[in-house]
Figure 1 (cartoon, rainbow, N blue to C red):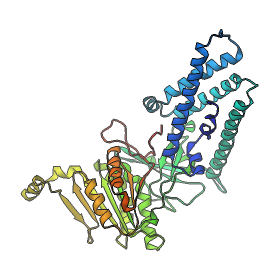
Figure 2: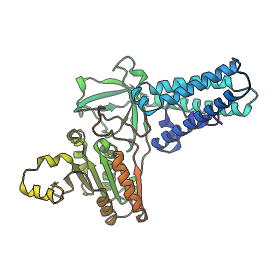
Figure 3: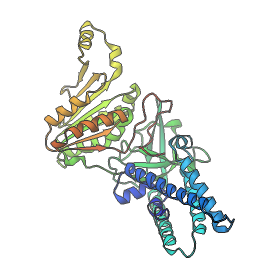
Amino acid sequence: MSAINLIPLLCGPRLALASEMLGISLRTHFGIHKWIGRTAIAEALLHIIISVISEQPFAWTAMKLSGVIGGSLLGLLFVFSLHLLRDIMYEWFPRSHLILTTVVLVALWFHLPSKKLVARSFFLAGVILWTVVTVLHWVHFTFRNIASGRILAKARVMGLPGAMKVAVNVARPWRVKAGQYIFLSIPAAEITSVLQSHPFLIVWWERNMDGLTIFLLNKKLVSLIDGPYGLEHNFGEYGTVLMFATGLGIAGHMLYIRELVSGYNSCDVSTRRIVLIWQVDDRAHLQWVKQWMDAVIEMDTGYILNMHLYVPWMLDDVDSDEEIEKLALGKPRVKNYGEHEMLDKHSGTPDITEIVKTQIKGKMGRMIVSVCSSNIMTDQVRREVQRNVSAGVRFVELDYQPPPLNTNVELDMDFSCKGMP
């Protein structure tokens, strides 16, 4: 049975490519991969226990030795896949995972009796699947990085408070879609960088980025791009779009907002109202996205975008008796901006229950609610949408997972999602 589970596990060196081909989210694919892997290890463990307690004497034959090696490395794979060790071995986990898996496959081939044709057929099916997907991956990788007259991409790095923004001039342009991300490798960074690649969420794009970005040391770095990957949600089918974000979760929504506003201006989408609820966890977050926010607001000539920023530190700036009295009565402090008051800042945190109820009551056409936020807010929003499921509201959780607040981990704009190393 463990050999059967090899088929879905061996989906190539990059799960993102298999997710793209299957049309499922990376979050879902990680969950499938994790639990099928655990099932295969459990079945292998059961096989080992049965072999140990059997009355047959143990003989150090090639088949037995390969079984011991394969079983031991399966246990090591399980230990390395634990969340704590994945975080410690972030840079080398994907490589070690691939190397250990390869050795396990070789050991398993020698362990399987030649007479068990069914088991060997399942094994070969998994290996063939891995080979085909790997070849497709490298063809796609070569196509993305080599074009007529241009070889490899050029990455420009800009330092921000507590973060890093990377602008990439690609060798072969593509039509960027919301929700996409790439794996980026910069060989010039250090000698081992060519073996490492980091996932970055695509937050914004321009046709010509020259002169628009400040980059570290005024130097372009040769880069390798793997991607783009990512499952796009068609928000344009819905009349009302309600978005929730915390901290860097705003990055997951930026291109969706841009596409909806642009589609409204060109009459290509059904969306008539966009409501963004953003809980800003750090002052620096406003600086990181200010340029893109300003561009979106300028594009929004139809005034369909309503942005509500919830800023906890506004409570520290209270300077009048009237505001103190309002806060004492439980009334939030609100500041409106712009002639049309489509942007406002609130003190404290959002009232998820009241926001969802209000937006459902006044929704225009069908409605979708998307979240790119902390686990706490995501659970709250999901619960409120489930309570109003009869209203025909769809709930979507974006793949990008913003880093948690108040951690010792340095924040950046890397892409990450639940279950991802």
